[in-house]
Image (cartoon, rainbow, N blue to C red):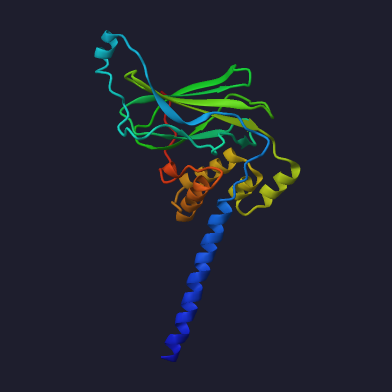
Length: 247
């Protein structure tokens, strides 16, 4: 009996220690630090727009019903609540939640502060709901410039379009930041503390997509998206989708 009484307190202490470690890990991922020197308006959640079509075209495409299979879902850009973020690279990967649909096309465009389009690509949208990362390729963005990126989902029957408007600013890492990230055991956490939103998100996403599945990475991902500066709880549990093939 004495042995059993001795084991129980130890088990309780171990349980508390594990809980404290989990709480500390969650707290660290809830401390993404958004830069204080950026801020532009936008809309990270897409609002549906009905597209007027001639009667003949409506009939030939099978009607005017939206292609979305879950009416409460919409396109959501994975950006902080202020709709802005830094990237350490001129070719970032941009992440968005794509709603379930019966057939749609995604269009990604980037514009400079003068409104000039510097990037435009189209891809078929995945039909299953989930989070998709879009690597921006074949364009070199200028450091220190705010670029507006817009993701549009258009139903292939031409009836509904969903648009988001968000911002990114390429800023190279300083020498001290580079050293901290190179030496960090957790690179994504180092990017989070430095305030580089698109880098931390891409680091975690790549780790999550690499086999085998890791429950701890899922917890970090959820903690980041649910943190106070981000507040994307509505899509934090959505699966990551593979990059779609060329149209």
